[in-house]
Structures are given as C-alpha cells and as structure tokens.
Amino acid sequence: MHLSEILNHLGEERGQYFNAVSPPVFQTSNFTFSSLDEFRQAFTDELAHHIYSRGNNPTVAILRQKLAALEEAEDALVFASGMGAVSAAVLANVRAGGHVVCVESPYSWTKALLKDYLPRFGVSTTFVDGRETANIERAIQDNTTLLYLESPNSLTFELQDIRACAGLARRRGVVTVLDNSYASPFFQRPIPMGIDITVHSGTKYLNGHSDVVMGVLCTNKVMARKIFEGEYMTMGGILPPHDAALAIRGLRTLELRMRRCHESGLEVARYLEGHPKVERVLHPLLPSFPQYELARKQMEGAGGLFSFYLRASRPDQAEAFYNNLSRFLLAVSWGGHESLALPAVAFYNIPGREKPAMPWNLVRLYIGLEDPQWLIEGLEQALAHV
Ligand SMILES: *Cc1c(COP(=O)(O)O)cnc(C)c1O
Image (cartoon, rainbow, N blue to C red; front, side):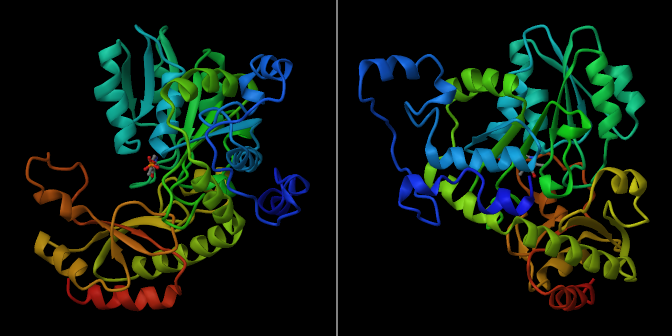
C-alpha cells in the first residue's frame, strides 16, 4: 500500500462518523450490545470485537492499522509507553528456566528488564556484541527462546545484520524482537527481513511532537493474538484513545518529518566532523562510521539522532559547551520537533548513581525540525567555549 494511503486514509471509516475528516476520539471505557446473541458473539473473539477499551477502542484501532501497514506487519498493538511494548514482547516469549540472547547496549530500561528483573522468574540473559553475527550464534543455547536486537541503538548506533540474525534465529527456533525506534518504519522495515516482532518507542518519531508517551509492537497475526490475550489484556498498559488521536495526527507528517530530520542531521553531522574541537562523530550514514556499508544496505535513512566526542581534556570544558549551547534544549528523549542535546557529563555527578559507561565527552544530539544552519550557528558559538 502506498505510504500516502496509509498516513492519510487507512483505517478511517469516515462514513461511520458523519464523514468527518478527522476521526473522533472514542472517549469511552465501555461498549454495549443490542442482544444476548450479539453479547455472546463478541466473546467468541475479543480481539475482533469492541467490548471494553482495555481490549479494543475504535480510535486506537485506526492507529494500529496504520502502524501495522507502515511496518509491513499483519497486526500492531499499542501501549502506554515504549517500555510497555518492549516488556510485552519479551514476557510473551520467555519462560522459567529459559534464556535470552540480547545485544550489548540496548535501551537502558530494556537492559534493566533483562538483567535485573527477569532473573527473579528464572530467566537469564547473555549480552553479546551484536556487530558480529557469530557472537550471537555462539551465545544461543538449547534453552534460548528469544533473541533481542536493537539496530541501531540510540546512543552509539551499533548495528546488527538483521537478515543474518533473523535467518539464524529461525533455524534455531528462536523468536526475534527488534527495537526499531531509531530508524522508524519510514527508513527500516525489519519484518520483511525476517524479524518476528518489532517494537517502538512511539514517543519518538511516530508521534513526533513530544506530547505523547506511547509504545508500539508489530508482528504476525498469530503472535499478535497471543500477546493480546496474554500481556496486553493482563498487564493492561494500554494507550488511551485521546493519545491515539494525537498519534494519528502526528503520523500525518511522518514522511515530511523523517526526510527533514535525516537531511538536517547529516548536514549538522558533516559540519561537526570538520570541526577542530570535535574528536569523532558517530552517525551510521557517514562514510567514517565503522558499519556504514551495513547501514546503507538495511536502512534508507537515519533520522536526526547522532553522537560526537568533544576534543577536550577536562570535564569543565564539556560543561562550558552545554552552558553556551543556546538553540538546543538539554534533555533526554528525541524524535519531536525540537532539537536536543543529551549531556553525558551530567551523569557523572548524580549522587547515589553509578558512574555511567559513556565517556564524559560524549554529546548526543537530536536534530529536530528547525533550520539546520541556524542550529549550526548555535553549535559554533558553544564550541568556541570548549
Ligand atoms: C525511548 C526509548 C525506549 C522506551 O520508550 P518509552 O516510550 O520511553 O517507554 C525504548 N527504546 C528506545 C530505543 C528508546 O529510545
């Protein structure tokens, strides 16, 4: 289906609501039945009927259809946060005494789930450098049920060879989950490459306006039903209909925003690569990136997120950079309209917190929708203080 059809029309049954162009927010918890027969019929298949909004809601259903089509998946489920989607995908595919193989540096809370939380239920995880498929192959054991990938990750952007990993896992009977938040389905579609489940922080590009926290899980019909009847209904971390309506609106401009972020991101990254106060830029679609060829093979673009190392010998030089960085907001997250800087050095002096694995001179930038030249001027001013 054409992208324009998906973003502008798919799932929108306008004839059912007075031909309104924008879908209504079905702000209801409950649905009634006109007869006992209808009531009974609905309970033969809860996934296919409107019974109660923890299960199905018509506004949420529009969003699900669009997201599934974007990922070229058979179905999609949406959650109250990205971690809601990650947790559902993982929990649906582990069992006591089982084992997970995961890439070395996934999203921090994903790592917490696998490393600190799941051992309570007898599930162990081996973390491996996923840049080499052979490391993943070696880590798979007889009791491995799940391979968890994130390509690229959202700080240092290591990739996995998605097709190779999917093929390997399939041969060993292992389910694959891939966090596709970085590239978004606009630039990377892992399901046609053989991945079983993709997950997203929809908080990032999919909603795209920094006003909704949401999660997305895309997969085949059988797995979607299993997760709907399991983790989705029992844990109940659903996306409210109002947030779904905001996300439908956000998606209308997915193509425009992704193209803009990709182009501006590369422009700013190239500028930084030539700057004397910059030691090194990490951007998967710069030729200097170690996995550039693989990135070009499996991604059509990169969005606006990348990192760089300041050429500085003392943390106070990094602090001077941020203190003079106007035009970027200091913040976590990314994927909205506004450009952001994530200061690694800030994590070095947090009382009661372990020293982070990332070096203090690492800067993660998110290039939003502003004029890239205007952002570059802002960076020039800040770098002069390093
Ligand atoms: C933000 C993020 C998440 C978590 O999503 P939330 O919506 O914050 O729960 C998961 N994976 C990646 C790569 C992220 O950037």
